[in-house]
Length: 340
Image (cartoon, rainbow, N blue to C red):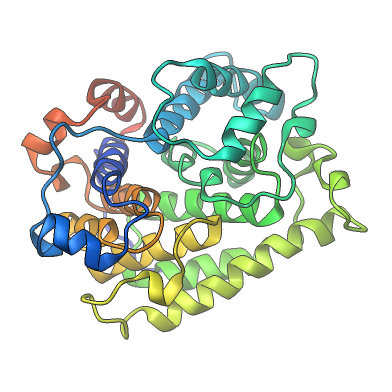
């Protein structure tokens, strides 16, 4: 594996990139590419909207980040120590008057159930949902330094499972956090897909019981290993499509045609990675391409920005944009906590 020196401001760059991508994609979500081009002009010239308002993607990323910070203020990150503060942050988001950015149904239903403190979180989890809400918000797990591989995988899957209980949602969230961690550590973009495929194969039968408890029993699988393998198999399939697309897809074509529209977790991961890998050293162009897509444009661009910022750091983003992104102060505060 080829690595370079890790970027010292990778966490801040990733969080700012995530929010910038979210703001770029907010006005283009639910539109096809011709409609976006008619409204915004050539995609390579798209500008950050004024004001630069984000969606629930960034709001829930911040909720997760705050919950993780609270958990680690109390000691080593562990399942029970993490679950309570993250759950509380998700419920606070659910009740917030700022929760008016067209949030996903799964998050709303699950958070309403999580609001009952006596309800085990596994009973709130939407076991059949693998929407991209599972991994649009997982970036903080990949940015926190010093976690073991077990902690990072368990935390990524637990935060997903609080709302989205489908095994593919868990696996895609784990992969998304792992991709961000690899980029923070200096992994070259050209090696990323192969490393993610190897990670998926290695973890295919690994059910993180200390983190997930009896979640698997709410599905129809005979064993926990069978349950989680279903998710990894779907992720391996989309990673194969991504591998075929990298280097062959034209940057002028809608990336969703190659790797999916991004409404579901594994496609959001793959299409965001494709946008990033089309322009690994041109982060602004990658965001513009991600926002000009026919699928879940804000979530695709959100993850694209997280990958690009983890790779290049805070200096990747134009200062005027970073200065006016919504929640910019809180994003920088969390980023400074986790920057190298």
